[in-house]
Image (tube, rainbow, N blue to C red):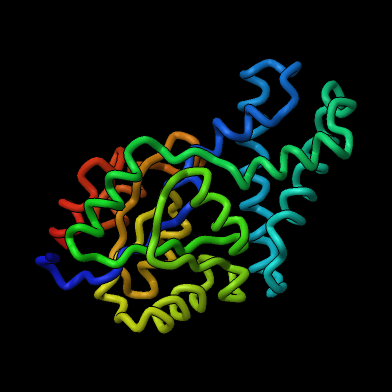
Length: 235
């Protein structure tokens, strides 16, 4: 059983728990070199985050992730004339659909099971749609007590209302919870809401963040989730 006041552990999903990069480069046209596909995948992911941030700043409603991914991919392809002809409608649709089937990072499944065995409730709290999260649980083999999407909550992270609403729905106090994420914007939002935070560094995400700064902002900074349950027991 738990030995701290923490009752619930919330996980960001894509990036933190899932190796989206591997899944994406497999879906991109294979005639493009692997290094270029990696670059396209990383840029696409960055542009998706930027699009969400712009919607939050403009106080616009949550947009279906399929639409956002489609817009950002189309815009990205326009900047790469050498590859533009490879991205017909069918190819774009295949690339977007690939986001529904991503493998888990190898350290995640055991970490979640150890948390459950220790008595913690575990949840997904991530931007995207509920359908996306359901499909990703199937493809990754990961199991959570509940999935909370921006579609379901009606607001994107890191808007304060996203954290407040998910805490209200689970009926826990901020100090009884911890967010595990590979995104500094997310852990910063959770901190403002009064939650504990564990940052997990993934090479695919936060590529423009200063990791020395991020280390000082969180309760723990981890290279992977191998000892996640032990770390949370210390909170």
